[in-house]
Amino acid sequence: MYSRRDLSLLLPILPILAGTKADAQNAALPSKTYRFDQLEVHTSGENQTRPVLDGDTHAGVHIELHETELPPGGAPHPPHHHVHEEMILIREGAMEVTIAGRSAKLGPGSVAYVASNEEHGWHNAGTTRAHYFVIAIGRD
Image (cartoon, rainbow, N blue to C red; front, side, top):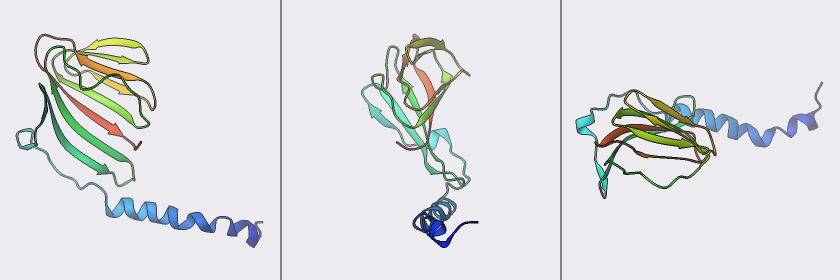
């Protein structure tokens, strides 16, 4: 049996728990379709990025999705690490993906998953432009 004193220790976190769930339900990403030809294009040098979505799921998990296009030899940024997890889904071209010092060459239909805080990076290892989607899961 818990005393009133024991239960009073939980009181400060109750609004946080209730608010998190309510906020996630109210602000969840809506069901929607996204046409590739209607996505906004951001250009940086020869790299192109198309943001698709960025928000929380109904379960309260943050998700961000974008499509990137790289020229041969191109990379989006130097190797790095962060708290959120990522997946890349190769649509066209050949990508070399390095995760925690181990590299693999991936082609269309291939997927790479990067766990939280693992150093990772990738670049276009082919002779044509590469297209891939990035799904970032969680927050930093």
